[in-house]
Image (cartoon, rainbow, N blue to C red):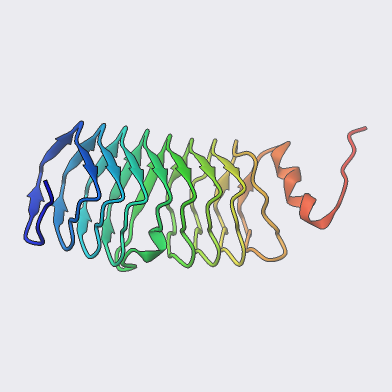
Length: 195
C-alpha cells in the first residue's frame, strides 16, 4: 500500500516488508528498525530517517533526494544504485558494516568519520567527497572512483582492490596495510620488485 506524505513512524520495527515503487515523500522515520526488508525503486524524497537501523535489507534504486539521513546505519545490507549525494547534507550521518554497496554515489558529500567496515563496495563514486577519518577497514573497493577526495586520516588497513591516486587525493596520515598499499604506486606506473 502506498504511504502518504503525512506518515510518521516512531520506534517502529519493520520486519520482512517488501516495498516496490512506494512513495514515502516527506515521511519521518524516527528510531526505527528495518530488518530483512526488500525496498526497490521507492521514493524517500524529503523524508527523514533519524537514528534508524537497516539490518539484512536490500535497497535498490531508492531515491533519497533531499532526504535527511541522521544517524542511519546499515549492517549486512545490499544497496544497489543509491545516489546518496542527493540526500540533504545537513547533519548527514550514515554508516555501513558488512554491506554490499554497488553503483552508489557519494560524490561531493561531507562524510568525515563514516564507517564502511568489512564492506564489498563496487563501482561507486567518491569524487570530491570529504572522507577524512573514514573507516574502510577490511573492505573491498573494486572499481571505485576517488578523485579530489579528502582521505586524510582514513583507515584502509586490510582493505583491498582500491585504486587511489595519491597525487589527486588528500592522504595525509591515512593508514594502509601491505601488500595492498603498493596499489598506491600503480597510478604512477612504478613497479616494485621483492628481492
